[in-house]
Amino acid sequence: MRVSFSPLGNSGVAKHNETLLDVARRTGAPIGNACGGIGICNRCRVRVVEGAENLTPPTRFEKDPESRLACQAVVLGDCTITTSYW
Ligand code: FES
Image (cartoon, rainbow, N blue to C red; front, side, top):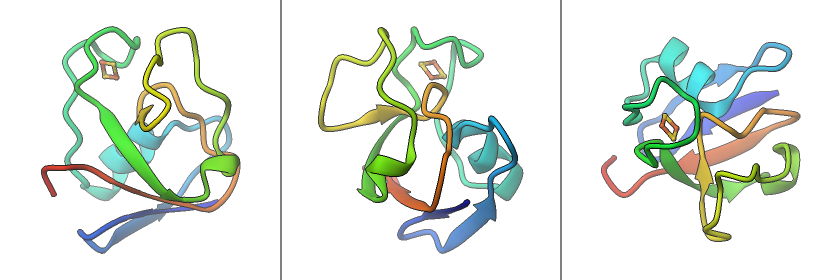
């Protein structure tokens, strides 16, 4: 379950039940977050480049079908994500 952060070039292997934000923090990929990962600040919004099907379905906090909240999306398989600020 490898998560790649494009175009940074960072990547990391997700452990069981880890979110995109968990993996980003561990690998040093900067993702905004202000609510401690409870889904209310929208600062951790990311776009999935590949592997959207390898994330858990959007939670009730996720309203935008074009993006995911990194703190809500649990990794189930390989994926690549990006943000507008990398
Ligand atoms: S860290 Fe606040 S919504 Fe994800």
